[in-house]
Length: 169
Image 1: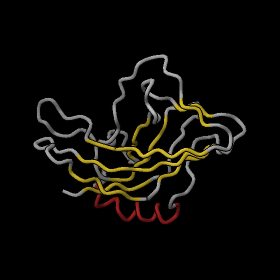
Image 2 (image 1 turned 180 degrees about the vertical axis):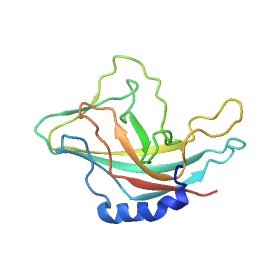
Image 3 (image 1 turned 30 degrees about the vertical axis):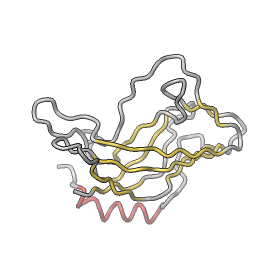
Image 4 (image 1 turned 60 degrees about the vertical axis):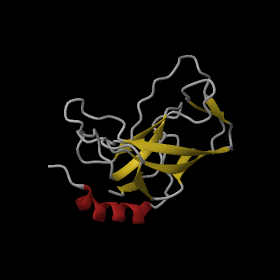
């Protein structure tokens, strides 16, 4: 049986205490992505009822400490932020984050390039649920829990540190 967010709280607090704002990335440890906080409150988007949606902002810092440029995929020619996903850190693969955006991108868009030694800051407007059941109207995904942000890039598994999302009912 999956854990509810309330039952996850002690484990989440322990994880955050052990690695608050810790460096988190994929195998290329010279590229590091961190969030500006270890917890966020998702607030109701006014006017979103009856399919209530929530939003919060995350500032992500990506440091390229490597000797090579890093390519971050983007969705459209005028886009200034990289393509990202939001992943729920859960015991069950059946559970997913309700904040994971679906991207519909044009092809052939040059990536955002982060030069060696450079740092970039992105303020990401996270919203969700991004999908609802067509019959019941129930939201798809979890809106509270331990999550990470991952980026489409040439660095395998480039992800941020874990952070906890709670919501205002």
